[in-house]
Length: 381
Ligand code: ATP
Ligand code: MG
Image (cartoon, rainbow, N blue to C red):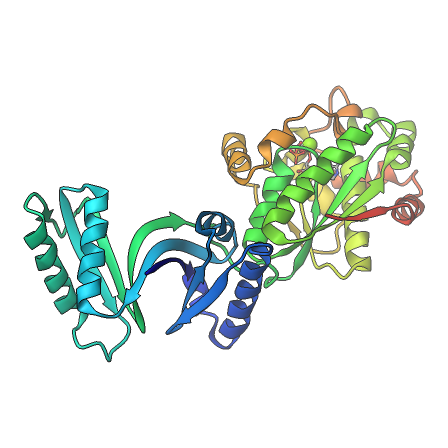
């Protein structure tokens, strides 16, 4: 008898038709990737995936973070034999100290001589005969005894909610604008969870933003890489661009023009590196630059889709998610970012596209973008 982790993946993967095999292979690779360094065995039983490891808890903790997995269950593996099944079921029910129970058997192995209903009945009767205090409750039992009968049989001990989503790497790629704030790492997580491969860009305003601010962004990219495997971080020197804007443009338009430059650089880097889209952590109405007008004016300079997975989320919900995925504590470290340094006193909240284009015409936009990109630093994290 041994315990295994049963891996249940998203039902969306079943709907992929001819591509299902590809999704499954990717998911398997991603599971193997997170288990790197642990001794484990991948066990297949009639299309179900199980993982065996001496270090089951650690393995479960890692596997539940893999995108595309809906649920993992810790199960006891026994022979597909009624006596063994009954004993394992009884032992499980006892361990939960419940007053009521229900047996839910699934028989995938049609060679097994009893059908699911018969197994339910016989196991239920056995438990009742061994424990005088317990009762059956089919509607809301305190303890559900899940049994799967395949080549072997499995009795569930614990069900653990996993990350959900789709296998990382199966849905194209994006350039995530990653600041040191709370929002953008969460936005990156949301995209990655849907299978989109992440690359990150950070705009660094040396010496106005410190080395520590850059380190913080690297740390955030590293936290994201727990979920995704290695991510590339492009650090773009942004001071020249900002100085030019400050020198030549109206104060109340600084932020929106700066955001257009961020967008241009992200798009150019995406183009140079074969990336299909851009992602930001913006949420509608959150700050002065995130009005509908502001977003429209920044998108004007983008030549590819811009995704804002947090657009309709409240800040408190974003913060909860940041805590859940483990980026919050790093995000709230107090190192300034380039936006907070160059904030106008009264930023325009309803910029007009024509006005902004006109204001910008005094800048040598192409040259500024090209120079920033020439001096980019790249990290593999
Ligand atoms: P965040 O918490 O992600 O920093 P925010 O609420 O502070 O977001 P802004 O500072 O207006 O909002 O930034 C909006 C988005 O622009 C960010 O979510 C991020 O995607 C991008 N961004 C802002 N500053 C930077 C930067 N220095 N480098 C890279 N991307 C940035
Ligand atoms: Mg920010």
